[in-house]
Amino acid sequence: MPHYASPTQLHNHVSRLFTGKIIKSLPVWYSAMKNIPPGQSLLRSPLQFREDNLQNHNLRLRRDTKSHSQKHLKTKVPRPQKIYYMLDALRKDFYRDHPYELLRPQILIEQDGGFVEKILGNLKFPCRVTGENVIKYQEYLIKKKGMSKNDAYIQACNEFYKIRAREEVAERVAEEQALLFGARGGQSQTERSLWLEHKNLQKSEPQIITQVLRLVS
Image 1 (cartoon, rainbow, N blue to C red):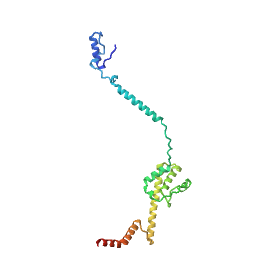
Image 2 (image 1 turned 90 degrees about the vertical axis):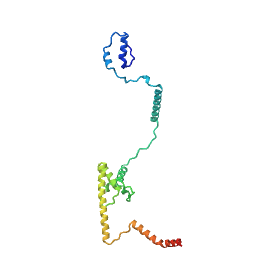
Image 3 (image 1 turned 45 degrees about the horizontal axis):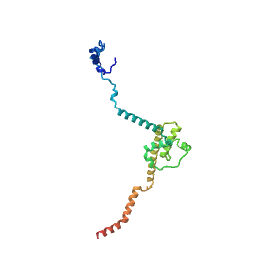
């Protein structure tokens, strides 16, 4: 028996068939369906889809597929591979944490690996230690000693801080000894600038007085 009614109206449809004597007896499930009717169907009827919406969807799908194909079939422009140097990464980390080291004089002469390995086996004092020495020493610890990047950075910085502290103490002791033996330190840049300014004002004082008298008269 074909049936095209909604599931919620199935018991009404069977009732009409029984009243019209098309069926001789009610089905066994009739009373249960009448007391507890089924819920609405979750399936949408094909009539709810509009033809223009379906056409727009198909057109947009074809356009997206075409652009995707063109995008992936496009010839990629050859680009050079990124060049990576360990020293650049180590240098970036060190000067990020110690920016004032950039103000110190730098040696622009490149040293070969043998020289670095011989000299930087351990940072020692007294010697002229710069930020580049610390960076190369960290690289030496990574490559030759098998240390990790963080451990090598910590060890190199610790030795660097000790050397800087010893340098400050040595400079302070040398200055005190020089003053003790009667040495006179030179003027600082600020003191010299103030002295030059005072000297120029003294030279131009007569000219200023003359100009003021002319304005008054």
